Image (tube, rainbow, N blue to C red; front, side, top):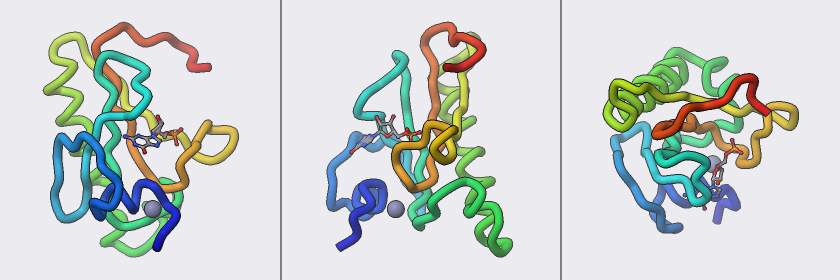
Length: 116
Ligand code: 5GP
Ligand code: ZN
């Protein structure tokens, strides 16, 4: 069995509050929300990082585009006129803690800049 928690959520082995699913991606509520709206858009197929998701063949590129499309649609829905933030943490310096590509959708409060 895979050790990757997001693969296990995508396959249904680990429960999550799912808000969207299609053949390529799911969106769930983050377990430890950092904003009133905090969703994760996760590829069904395992890619360690966004670089690896975009660096493969054209079907991989289509999936990374789908992640952004789904994330921005959820941001529009949940953030409304106030807006939202999409984040893709990558690698150690990027603050990535789960090694399976995902897009954070944050909304419901004013975000700070620069990020920590
Ligand atoms: P990263 O730090 O890799 O950018 O983001 C990983 C995110 O996944 C974190 O915000 C963390 O709270 C969330 N997370 C980690 N494990 C789980 C889990 O089992 N279920 C859900 N729903 N979120 C998780
Ligand atoms: Zn995985």
